[in-house]
Image (cartoon, rainbow over all chains, first blue to last red; front, side, top):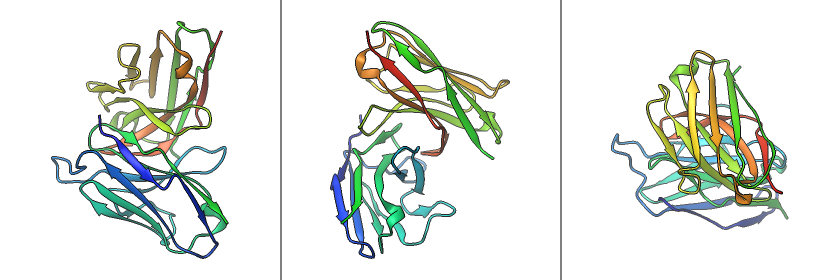
Length: 111
Length: 117
């Protein structure tokens, strides 16, 4: 099974400051079709997760451009350029190349 | 509007069985994969099972392999997760999710399964 490891697990951030979350996979996420299936989700308390980014760096419709994804192979990063109050919650990366598996989650809170 | 709605959760004793249903609307159901993802109380997300758009390909997490089965009825726009030999560690909110190659793009609200005596 592919193990996906996120860090940090907890991320206190001051409003307006940047934030960064790392996601590492135990296997390369480059699929035989040439795509890299690494996704990012955001879950607010009491809500279902919502996808933010797919195929490493493609933002979903309606996702603010302060969110960006990058990386390749086994190492990936989600960056928020300026954290806003609505960004609190838990962020998960999910690999979709070798079936599916999620990282453990990163809880973002406002300092 | 894309919707996936789960049902069938509840309280079941260890060793018991439960069948979850997922009803979809707002999209061409037979063109999309479906995944079940669960979340135990206060913990993270765990992928549970996958079924392809035609129903010909299925996959399961090691934690449920041999105990859970998945099926779909494209005529009824529905997917089913049959859960047998349930354990306390299967207690979770179970989400039905719409899939595309390598991703999940829509999530239901989830249905709670509690395994307890």
